[in-house]
View 1 (cartoon, one colour):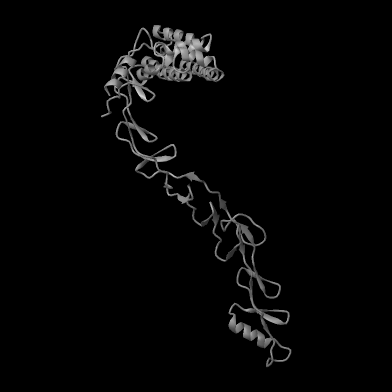
View 2 (view 1 turned 30 degrees about the vertical axis):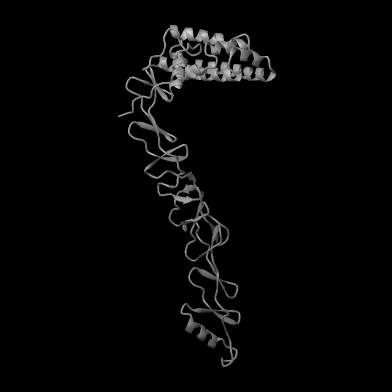
Length: 347
């Protein structure tokens, strides 16, 4: 542990050539990482919410009155006396039996006996069709053929149905409105998962609760800076120090290694890729609001000049040497850029 501490101290004082303003070095209190804590692994939402019903992994609105659920949709319920034919409701015919014919014992060539038997069993009355007596059809029905009672044409609109064909009315169909399930009331949703609520003055992002910045500080990604200027400086340091370390590793970690890497086909490919990545990253840093806030200051101009010189190096080896500076591994840059204190926990 003692040797590690000495190594860290030694590396942390090595001058950085990438991402450091020569005229305004960061103080210990200029930047801190937001206080944070984990709130566990998220769980899948299980609640329908708002009086909705769960079907599979989604929720749907409840079906209104006089409708019933069919799959994901709501269909009309057929009124009493109508037959359910899937997407239609049909006013059904009914048979009035075989009727009352003449039989032995009746007066010859007379249907008076058949009529009397029909009247005794059918108080609504009877009527003759051909040589047979039949009960009269119920109100709303009329005789169709000899022994069929056919209903009158239904008023589909009055029955709450859509127009149809013949004695059928089309059902009204309400298409389902699927929505994702939601979290239980005591949980918070984030990116499709449910988490425990964060403590006061903490904001949940995924499985982590992040504290607010101290008074007088501005939010700077996962950290807090004393000003937009220092936020830009820290952001640049972190981006470029990581790239510098990666570049040195790709180039075998030293000036001599850089030369050897550039002179090999495989190494040259790695270095060329890192050059392009560096240039792209520097372009991205220049576009950030943090950099623009200090772009026209002495520190910003100095920093831009340094970075433009690195990004416009004549060859890969020159770039790697400029990035590595006096630290052949680039480790000190990463330690300096990321080795900041944690902000005080919010009250």
